[in-house]
Length: 172
Image 1 (cartoon, rainbow, N blue to C red):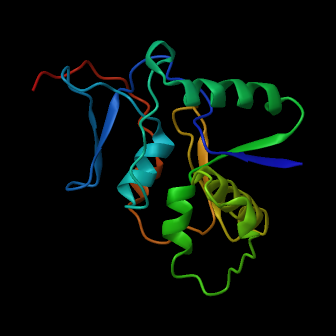
Image 2: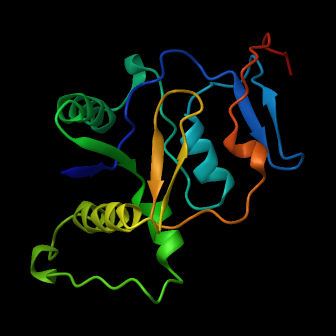
């Protein structure tokens, strides 16, 4: 069984040392005034213009829904193949895809939260990924990747390569 969860895999163990600069298509060290929240996979999704992440923080400040996701990943990961999905990014990629059709029983949506629709899109994302139509992005920081329903065809190669040299923080 393959499972897709709309939450980060884990909290940040420490602030991230790198920020992506779209203008120069390169990584730069985090400054002392930047929080350092977010994982490599979230940076890629944001940089591709697919969605605006709720940046993954450290455990001490993570909201309840993220903590639940961390626990869910931990519980399922030993017995199943578990992927992080980002439904809003999936919506962005699938918006122009005429070859992806999903039939939904709308009776379960009346008065319900958007989370129900996100769960369906998460399932479609995993289906498309398993059919090798999608891709997995991020993971260079060893904090997990996000599965997308389609391949990323245009992006700077450096975006997908997490820097390995740790530099001291720079003041602004």
